[in-house]
Amino acid sequence: DAGVTQSPTHLIKTRGQQVTLRCSPKSGHDTVSWYQQALGQGPQFIFQYYEEEERQRGNFPDRFSGHQFPNYSSELNVNALLLGDSALYLCASSLGDSFVFYGYTFGSGTRLTVV
Amino acid sequence: DAKTTQPPSMDCAEGRAANLPCNHSTISGNEYVYWYRQIHSQGPQYIIHGLKNNETNEMASLIITEDRKSSTLILPHATLRDTAVYYCIVRPYGSSNTGKLIFGQGTTLQVKP
Image (cartoon, rainbow over all chains, first blue to last red):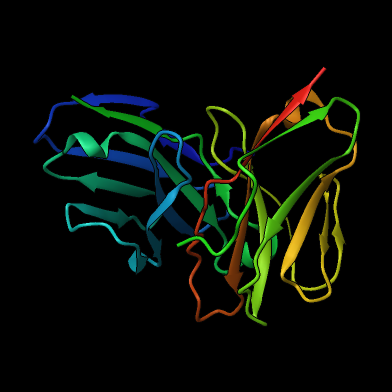
């Protein structure tokens, strides 16, 4: 049973460019959350998607946007990249609110480097 | 902002119990305590959670003080594979609360041979 799959694993972009990161949730899961983890820091919540809608959003600018597809997969888009956007981007999935009892399943992340 | 306090680092000898403390003195009555860990180059992994009773699963035990202001995660027989950053997180229970997790800096546990 595949867990959470994220692509690509590594990415290098130039300041000002746009990037799209992809996430396939664990089989059977319908809720996807995105986190940003800067080097040496804990993950920071970006937003969560459920039923193709953004359900909650963290303290991130509008340059960060997302989408969830009918098959529950998700994309994270970041526009006008800044050097400070360099981080590990993590995707987490769950079945509805089951994370309360079983926790989230995280992917291994996409390492984004902005130069 | 994280509502928990953890020591930045700890060492443990392989085969011994690892006891990781967490302070959550402002915890509310409807908040659970969750523990996740993050092994280098991987995403966080759920370990265990509890409300007020002690909990045990195949990975670890969670001891929550009676006043719920602190807790301890216990790995009974630490192995080298348990070397990771351990995060203690409190979050409210209830379907009206979405799943945002607030991670702090965590405790880096180094298991030594």
